[in-house]
Length: 299
Image (cartoon, rainbow, N blue to C red; front, side, top):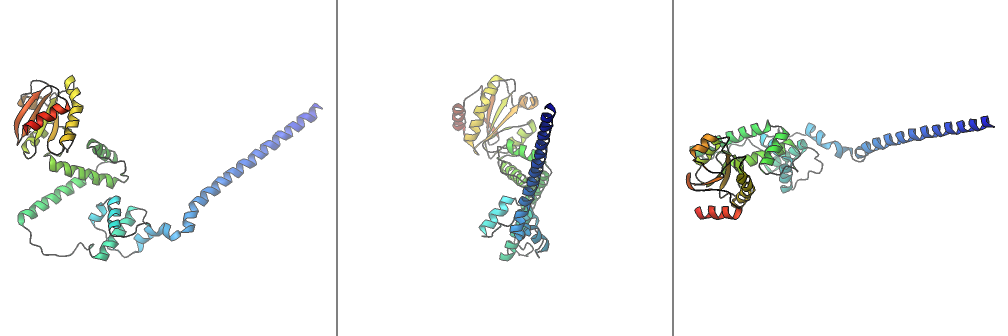
């Protein structure tokens, strides 16, 4: 009796294990089939639409794209195509977008970069434009040599949003625009409108030589409690002043020679420069409204 029971129990266990093997095999087959079907359906429905961009680049008779077109970001290309009323729904990468833009420009005659137009140009303006182009190209070359992490860090330091910038070229163009904007406002490019820049002694000398925009300097030290208390107030002041005043700070411990030349005795010391000359200075921590009132009364 016990032997029959054990035999039946063993048979039941073996049948259960066999059913489990069959079910597991069926699950694996089903997953493989689902993955294959998922990859095959888009091509089955529209093979031409799926593979058109790469095929178009290789087979169309399109003139080589220019450096200016290659340097455009994806968002800039799409914006121009929208303005031209050109569809780019079948373009899935930057290469196909560039080709579509090239075709559009060629169709309306604006894509020919080799037209000879005789326009009289003043020699000074020509030299200035040449120098500007050289500077722009050198900046672009330098920025393109940076890593994606370095580009994002610089944009973050300049309070520029980069979350929506996916491709490296988009980050490169954003950094170039930020540097160009800062260079117009600041002699060294270190100070941006509405921000507080931490300058070195050499940078401060260069900024003082630029006299078209007033400069507010905060001479501070890391160990100084009132300096740290006033730091967020200075940030708010910079935002309120915008492009009216350059706002900067300098660590007196790191640059003691420059601090000595400025005759800094107490910390923090705020010095306001107008037309390259010291207009006024004040020692001690001030709040936002007090700082703005003092600055506006001296301008």
